[in-house]
Image (cartoon, rainbow, N blue to C red; front, side, top):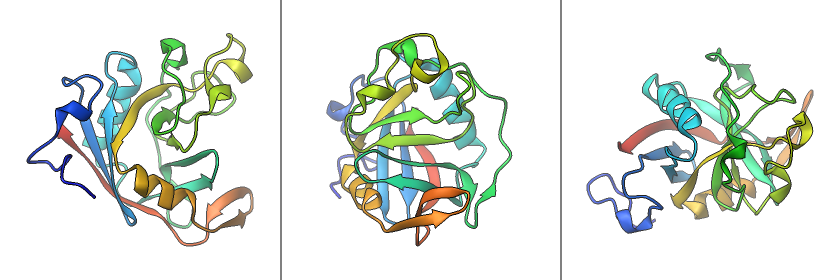
Length: 186
């Protein structure tokens, strides 16, 4: 890992907007630095920051990993113990930010405005996840940031061995833990 995103010396040239906050996701496989797009997705960013401030993500796992698609986490502890969440938020998929490789988006159910704590990082461009129309299956998933450093860690995570753990599929055989998420730039 390079030192460009260390807390002491954040290289703001890596950012889309130097005023955006940056989060560090510390995992058992390495650190992932995320620029949060507060202008494009203010509701999603505020929601994510609240969970970070509450230390919600510490001890959660990446529970769904699909190479060629995405890695998802932020809702379960080891053993699939689901964490209690805050109320769902408004889906900001209409913001025009695409689900491209390295972007982070809010996970949701088939209900448009159902996202809470779970997020996913796209490991490839997933255009089909972008807003297409106002029907639930085509509304899209709200991108609220992008990996600015640590995409190599995302690539390591996407490649872990997975199995079915009914009723879930694509579950890492060995837990990939989120040790902590911290804000390194507000």
